[in-house]
Length: 316
Length: 245
Image (cartoon, rainbow over all chains, first blue to last red; front, top):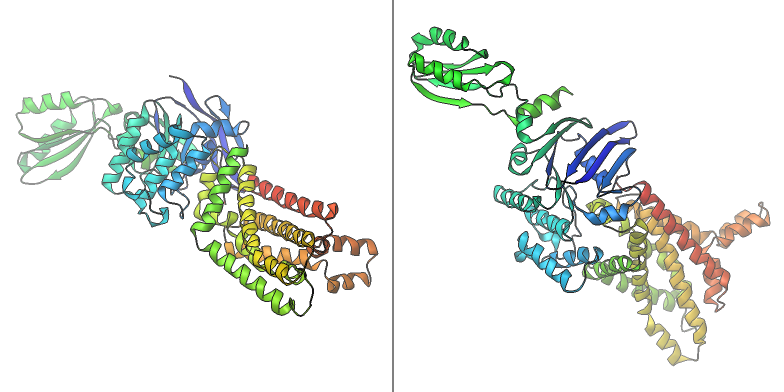
């Protein structure tokens, strides 16, 4: 797959504040890249530089072969952008606003009207078509912003917090919309909702204090979790057996650490953390079977993205 | 290049009329310009068939009304964040600045055209020189353009419309007063004639009076045209420098 977006050593300085510090990455067609990071990490600033709203202090942004600084119009034509908070012209109706965007994007004639209709269907704006935008709810405003961004069927879509402030149903709609479009486009979206990364992103970049601290698929990032592949075991055994059980479990090959979670009359619950994040579930289940303990529950930890997130961003 | 300007122009002009701004502005403009020319300008008792008393007050009328119109040009875009949308569309900053300015200018032209009953009245009552009246309208329109260009630039420096209004008013006042006898007398008592003339040559009044007397001097036209060009250029430069806050 071809590389559509290429960011190299991108840097932005606001006076004494270094907002973005030498960020580099590439995005290929078909990828949905999630930008993660605490508030103020530099996500929006990076997006503003990619879309040409802010001029970088140093570094280059190349979209589809063209540099944003040297050929801004060529790049902007390829981009669809939903700025943070989905700004629009509040006194216009949805219909007028989309017409304005279509005109300025150079769509004409039947293609223009067809495209507007298509987008209206796609983001479900029929009900509010002739209402002024400032009378709309937050969810509808966000959808108008999305409609505006995808109107010209751009190759690259930049979405700054596309689901912020939406209710769970609306979030679901927006995510499925993003998934639908993912194949033929490059989508870069920022979010601080971690579940979203799993729901839509094929790749995630974590930014903290203006630098990239992690870059990989959501599962790769989760694998960095300290409790990755840990086994949580709940046994329906009497409390009196606890000491023996603990000893036995800790001795299983590959187990680095045993963390007792609950020990009471009804059940004993332990978390077994492996050495080097290796898979130990087979060994544990075999051992439990040989001991003839009755198992109430057994779970393998696939890693917690929010644990990784906190670990990577709080340290900096 | 030309087409996106047209799109911006139409959107802006339309937005004046989809909000109360247009109607409030036009009604107040017509009302006050009428009052000024009939009461303060002695339109009737002068006994002359011309629109001199009507045009005489335009600089003062514009001083308050134009900043009210221009303050929203960019300050509002900044406030609502739509500037980020506008300037990431495939248009240049120059296109956006020109489109918005031309829409505001066209809007003042509409307001000015709606004063046509004055022209009809004076033609019924007497036999005026309509070329002089035409020159008056042209001068007034050019001066409105200069006010608007100043307002466009000063509205781009802030997201607060009130601040944009006040600063524009002060700068425009300076441009009017620099041709006022009061100011010129103050300078002429000690400064060399070159400086006095320079200050006076910057004034709206000097050039506007010239045109309203019916003498369409190319220098007066160049003055207003270059003033507009300068301030619009400054708007573009300012926005390029400081798009975000």
